[in-house]
Image 1 (cartoon, rainbow, N blue to C red):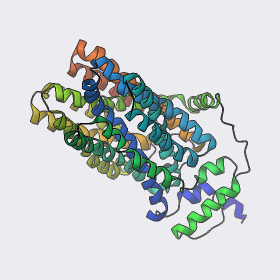
Image 2 (cartoon, rainbow, N blue to C red):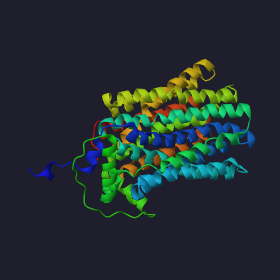
Image 3 (cartoon, rainbow, N blue to C red):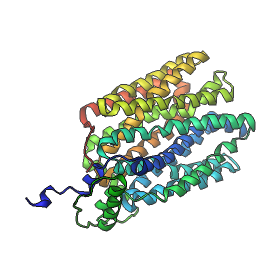
Image 4 (cartoon, one colour):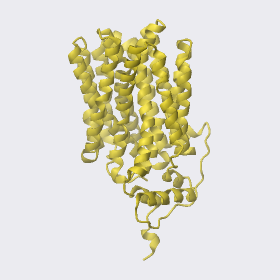
Length: 450
């Protein structure tokens, strides 16, 4: 028998390794910490809007730019860093995102006015916007196939941790010191430490293989085989390929490739990202302001929002348990519309504190079942050469919606149609998205990454 007819590829070897916390688990932890800061920063927008509205006497429309500038920066960062990661490598992009975020967060804390503040928040968002697509691509490509769905779903567990830390820490700082700047500076030091730790993460072997860097790929694969205690076996690597150079046009080339790969799948990915995350970002951005308007004290509004985020950790656990049993599509089809429905209920009972808190906790749980499954699902829809940019472009589209949506929500829809109807409109978009997914996008449970 010819050995080459049965020899596994390097990609197969990596995806069939046993799971070890000291190997793949370490990358999961390091990647997750960056994701935690993404959640912390997005949630901070909801904290800063009421605080800076008082500090600079802002109207609701002007205050809306606090979140919009940050999220639009994240949108551009998501597509830019996804493409950069597919071009120069996961590792370099993995490290640079948090460094840029940290520098501009410090500058934002000392901004003299709302204009400069929004500029610095935009740049911080640009750096941090790369965390999700780059982290998911890197963690997914290191994770064995059998555990990949659970691991990618569990990645989102870092989100409620970061969001809850933001709310609880901010509430404590405001109660103790009353200075909004401290709510920004407090997360910079740990972000710098995570940046330093990220430098020790190896480059993705799947990325190296697809770039034709065979010697480096073999070194990483061999070291992983040794570290996991797997039995060494021969494997094949493809011949060197032409590596595209990063340029202004490369992002648009990748965008075209994403749509040419399968326009129905890409439509499903973009629509799901846009609608489900719009609902979530509406809550993070405006729930503190909504609760304060309903009579909650600042401290209690921030603690309630933090609790809404914290209970999401239970949702992530449920998602991790169900994702390989039920499948990605069924979970999204049920929890996506349900999360929007709970926000509509919140709008009706917001003047009853106990009821408002209860339904916000329900929302926090349900939406955090949907989101981690969404991230795992979209990251599996594309081949290796498009995984970072495919996920990144979908994330970009959602961040644009998340940036513009809360601003339009506060200036037009909320005053014109009321809170409940505005949330219901967002829920209608979620329903349309899951219907398209059901018809035109495949299930990816247990799919082998290529």
